[in-house]
Image (cartoon, rainbow, N blue to C red):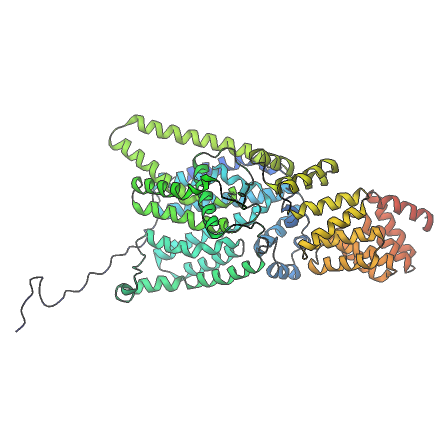
Amino acid sequence: MKTQSPAGPATRRPAAKRATRRPAKPVEQPFNGLILAGILLLTAVVYANSLGNGFVDFDDPENVTGNMSIREINGANLAHWFTSPLQYMYTPLVSLSYAIDWQFGADSPGMYHFTNLALHLANVALVWALIRALTRKPLVTYLVTAAFALHPMNVDSIAWISTRSNLLATLFSLATLVLYLRFLRTGRWPALAGAVVLFACAALSKSTAVMLPLILFLVDYWFGRLPALHPRRIVRRWTREDWTLLLAKAPFFAISLVLGLVALHYRMDTVVSGYNAADRIIMVCGALVSYLIALVAPVNLAFAHAYPDPSGALPWHLYAAPVVLIAVGWVLHRIVAPKKVFWFGAIFFVVNVVLSQTVLLIDNYKANRYVYLPYLGLFLILAYLVERAYRVASDRDLGWLRAAVSTVLVGSLLFWSAAVILRNAAWKNTITIMSDSIEADPNVAFTYNSRGIARYLAGDYEKALVDFNRTLEVDPEFILAVHYRSIIKYINGDYQGALVDDDIVMAKYPGFAAGFNERAKTKLALGDLNGAYADADMAIRIDPYLADAFTTRGKARVKLGDGPGAITDLTTAIGFVPDFGESYYQRGLARQMTGDIQGACQDWRSAQSLNQAPSATSATTAITTSCPAN
């Protein structure tokens, strides 16, 4: 006969079903849409002075002004965007957005700055929608939205045209999260399908978006729908709803894996080296601490920061960074309630920023633009702290506390707005932003190089050469400075010196199309026609959109007596750049070789009308000696 145990009856009662809750539909009140409108209006006002800024001669030429593929939207260019990297990054939707801008504004920088600002305003509205759906707390929603809209660290993502990838990826990532929340609330699969499509768009805009599937688990955690992950509990405790949520994330991870591998295939410009694994972990911790400091004290901001010297021990403050992170995390965990806010905000920040700091690019380390989306996690933590302070002030009737918090908020808003306006002014052109960055951190090689490029393009070769030499003093391996130094030597008639620099460049970067083109020009000047043709041909093979290489190869063909081939090359060059006089002049010579005197004279007159030295002078001489008076 069975006896009853002291613990209870012999028959076991059914285990209680694990409680889960769906995110409630956001309430309409007391949210005030006028506050969102006010935030958007203020954001547009403080960013208005960015619309008059120019291009920056760091990435902008390669992405926009010198990118021939964006000048027309057609099947061939679409295929090029989806099968080729843009500045070593797989970002086809960014190229498409630039192409759309080109149709409206051509090479006017104002159009691109307007689009960047419009994208930021759209992101502000999406942040409002996301935080509102996530928290259902009006004050938290207002604070996070305003901080995202106006924090000075975000200026670099908006004022620099070449950070379009950041804006687009954030747009699609935020929209993905909003739709995923709708899926959690309603269980409707069309919402999930839309989220999957939007996530694919995010990953096609910037490779760092591949981390977003991890954030979906974080959203599950926020709503108490993250199941127990202990291996022994998966089968026994996971509900059908748990397995459905896991299955729902499969397409996100599939897209993340495929596009992540594609991005890695094209990502070949990691140029900073010399650190071991421990150093890199310490440096990531140091970057996180710097971002925490800039969150509350966004002063003395720089476009770029120097990496620590890899030849010896790292600076002492970097070794302290892990301790600082642990201490700050412990304090926030103690004071932030509910605890899920701390974990959600902290993990959201780290997951979204850590990938950018593990890739060692010359302009990567502690760069402001990489916290554009990640800061949302920290803004959420701070907003909950402010809301708690107001609640304590109300419950205990502490008027002074309410006044103090309000003063800090208003002061921060005014300070941020002024800082954004001043930061936009620093982005006015290449010289202003690079000089600003050099003043904040004088040990970054590429800032001198970029300023040198701007001075070179302005015709100030003497100051440009000073900047290029200073670049090489800071970093002797900075080959792009050697490339531009060779161009100045070529302009000054030092062809042998230019050839020495060209050979150094090509030995270091044998896939550099512009380097082959410049060496081809130098060989032409030295009379090495076959060598010039071979280098120009290689430049075109590497980059079939490099218009100047077609002009160079066309010139080589003229000198080699290949008139028809020269006409083909020079016509292609003119199709890319219809206002370059040298292409018309050289095509005139090629047409003269083939007996087409009328066509030659027409090309020479086109070169003459463009009034570009020395092609205009040469064209005038050719017209005088070879063309009929009429």
